[in-house]
Length: 116
Figure 1 (cartoon, one colour):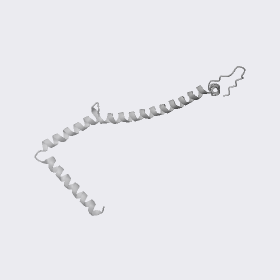
Figure 2 (cartoon, rainbow, N blue to C red):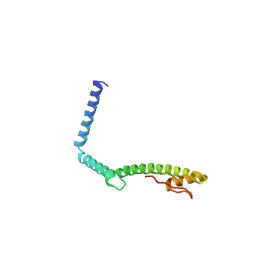
Figure 3 (tube, rainbow, N blue to C red):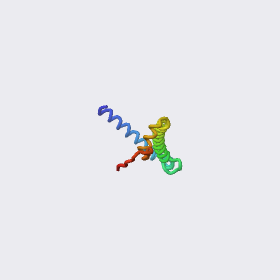
Figure 4 (tube, rainbow, N blue to C red):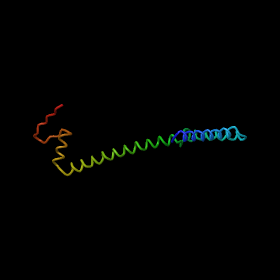
């Protein structure tokens, strides 16, 4: 896009701005200004003030995505715990090792040394 393309866009924009000024200052200016004010008020209400505003809608969407990620992480943790439960419930040696390592259990006659 060369200089002529940019100049053409500028002329079109200036022409559009002239049309907007004509409408704003035209014979129906009171209706146009009323319509602009009502539209702006509606956008402010719908965007920020009403209970179901766009702002609250967007923040709810962010919170929903955060909670879904948290649910996924909890589900992964549950799956890991289920694997560990299956492993501990099927093998007595594994259960004994887990109890010794995590809870300091000892078999009768064993000496337990706790190092910190």
